[in-house]
Length: 222
Image (cartoon, rainbow, N blue to C red; front, side, top):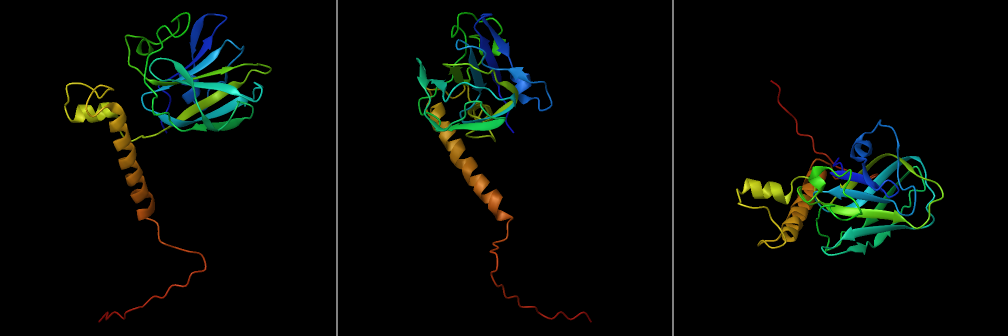
């Protein structure tokens, strides 16, 4: 299982980021509060793109029928089209979407009114991640979270690891050739092929109620 690189609640009333990364990944950990007012936001970051998010809650929230899910496209936060909706209104659930083709990694420096509470790795001095931002237009009951994790588009390796293996002088980026999106697509295709072979190769081609004929050859034990 891949865990979050970063998970924050932007607490607008305190003008600070609250780090929930450990709480999100710690299965037996204490529950933490999520969106408490309409000006709060959740920020979830990973070093690779992903297509779904799982939540396990201790207390289900009430945020109406819709949460605002956004991603960074390189210049602005854009609305994320959702294919499977979840509004933190049940003890567990999954939000699913198609990873946007223009999803761009970034840091969180300057995104909100203050950078207080950010880990160094998520400031301009750190490493860019792919972020989702979640907010609510109504808050009746505050959800409390026990854990959360992403479903990455690829999990066996990363573009950075490939660049290191090839001993390149720099990581893949939007300006390299091939660019990072092209490398990610290659990783996804190869991992899909590996998964297909390894998942099926050890399984017998069995169908229920199908008749099989076996020919037993005698063996001379003498």
